[in-house]
Length: 387
Image (cartoon, rainbow, N blue to C red):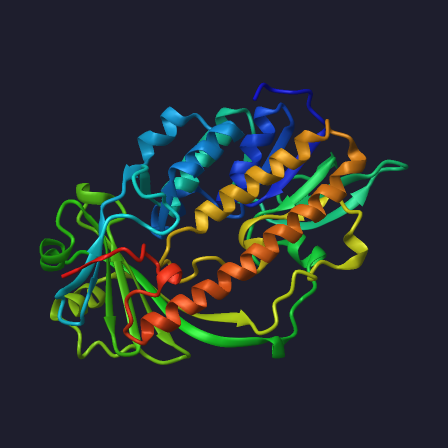
């Protein structure tokens, strides 16, 4: 798509994958875009080791938005095989094709942090304005007789914007302004998950030899999945352990190589996953229906792939950003269309996220019961080779 006539300026709070893709799409179409990130510097990206599976369809979408495909492919690596194993480390099934990736077509792995870093650099390459260590305090309508937006933030305000977007998670100012807060009694603790990264050479040699990227170990009341963030070029392994409710994982029945990996890991986090009991697409405040304000990605407050089983969180954010770019630039930049298109986009995106959240909860419930394959609900394709 050729660049088209620009319209005013846009402010994006947060440099999430969805926010960066949106910024690239708007900059490629010659809109002035300013992005603010609360982190002090890019070093934090190296520690975000969450697994992202990128199918060929997502590469095509990124190319349509404006990302250079040649540079993108340089940071991706082809996916390797996956395996299910029992607590003793014996392989029970294995396969190569991942859910959401058409069999026979290319698919790729990359860590969440590496993908964020690449997209941020692409945004800056297109001339986007990027601010580190900048916290957004307030977004509000301004201008006398004109519907323009201003943002109060660290290191100076943003003024006279045509639109503002929150891409900085559930604590986003845009989310707080737009989305009705779910009442505490509508939340329930469902699972506890722990993440970390470390080196365990015995595990790597036995289960994650070259050509194998991902292992899921199933034990009673525990799901442990492990992958290689840097592929075969680095010995570091990232892992995520999920248990029901607030229970503490019992590793006694697990092979020593699993216990050693967890015990020797660095940067171990422990988080509780709370899911809405009654999620509804009608979470947008009625008074905001005519606002040129929106949210993207985790700022919706409904997480996707929280347990890192399918690796499709990045794919969902890419698709959300690409659909928003297409919607906004199809109408020829007429200001009157912006709120309408934003509300359509939010309704579709939020409904989809709710469906995917229920899918993820179903996946984890089945895996905690020690059942490997759940048809269309499996983290991997259902066509697996049983060992």
